[in-house]
Image 1 (tube, rainbow, N blue to C red):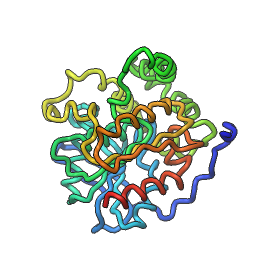
Image 2: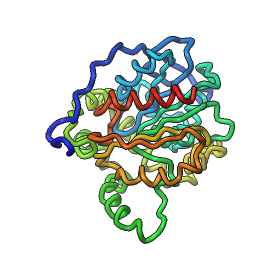
Image 3: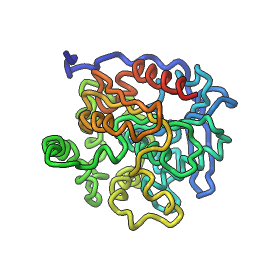
Length: 315
């Protein structure tokens, strides 16, 4: 039986260590700020947050991976301070994939590197894992499966797609000019409550307010949604990555989804299970009980155990 939605299923563990900060200037002109844990000489693990969230979402997983010897780097994505606004104005997923590939080079990553992503970060992890000649050895994604698992397949999908259309109302709202930015604070607080019932997002909303302190930054976060359907506006610099995020990764994938996710129906995880034969060996799908959309915060210990086991298997 699922626990009451009135409280979190599990108390989040206390982070083992506080992160250090790292800054990197990418060749694109983007100034990136990141939280980092672990030895500088360890294999690289790049952890990507989603919306409406920040790099602090990895405050539990980051120290755990660092204990295993990983050099964990959790960047604030373009538009989320202290990382800069996009120099070219692009918040398309291929631009974020480009940033993730550039981070690997800038940080001296090798063939052991892995990419981990949640929500928008999951889309970027999929695209990074599908990119031709990707330097990452594996991908971990949470809460949003690869696009082929989301594509309609027939009349039998109608009940699932009808429910998902109701859950995804906010994606249409985000296409409106100005209004989402004006009601941003109340809007994102509502999303956190709906997407992860019973979880207290107070600390996370404080981090979000610091990362999106003004209208320009809040607009950047909403522009992720406005950019997604406007593929024709993708800058030429990212043209070779235009379709990678719509494909299955070419590296082993661990996909995790919360059973109580109020953002994306957990039945999409079952659809990805059907696609496992098309993914590289050692790919896995796990639905995490008693967790909503922000499973890395709600069930931090369980998520960490699954990620650690997967990374040990592919190392």
